[in-house]
Image (cartoon, rainbow, N blue to C red; front, top):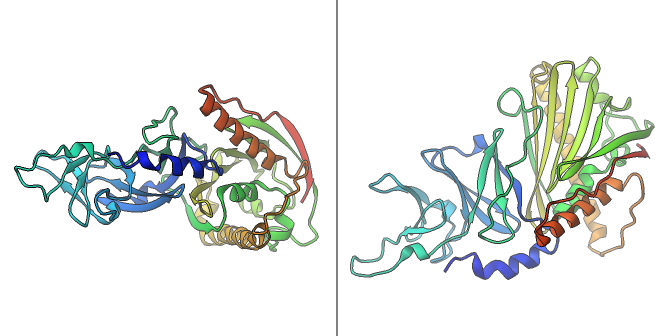
Length: 363
């Protein structure tokens, strides 16, 4: 009777198209989910009811009532005489606990015997870390996390200073590859405050493997990246990517820090939620917050517009030509995905396929 079971074949077919499982996905900011609130989100093509009980407990359930398919996220919280909180479906009031088990069917009479606990909706493990909420998507409905949610350096000063969101009309693979592409800057992000039309330099950066990903090791920003001048001093930056779709830039200026985090969350095979967050204890983020927010927003929308243009060609299913060194990070991403899937399938530890390298390109 568990509603996750008949979906397994369909889910496996979708995941075979490139979605990673047995991993944490960014779902929400903690502050966006108040006690007693239910939110509807989409995750890997599945509807999810993300909620926080009045007592603060987080939970994530498949957002489809098994009775008449009404979304549980449109319902309300119910508290029984013992203080146990459940979510009541808005259609007929069927109530479900945080573990997905049905707790009550109000339409049953006292003499109608039925083991309602056998009725379940899929439960997704959920965790809160550094002011963010992550949902674990297992390869099977009963899969449990074998690792904590990711931790990021430079999360300082409470909540994020900047938050921006956009949906890219793209599979997460396309969004990730675009995110880590180092050579599109002079063509897509050409502004007076970032770089001019003729400002292209040879770049040489060192890369090393990191947990489930890789990093461009700490270095002084390129001289034609003008926005760093806002921070003053002598900034140094390290840019890291981690599966399934997390990219962060950690900048230090003396004792001050800036963390710019981008979280890619696949809504389905054709849409990816892009969430940009920034934390900092640098005075510039207080003094120039509107300016910095506009700059970040401009960058994200330029990338989104390029995705729309790219879709015009991708619909013809062309063979794509990737080159070294500018496209090496994209190749690493594909290798990381293959190894993640293989390690899970074979029941062994993940072995990072990325090796230290120095890459060169012009941008």
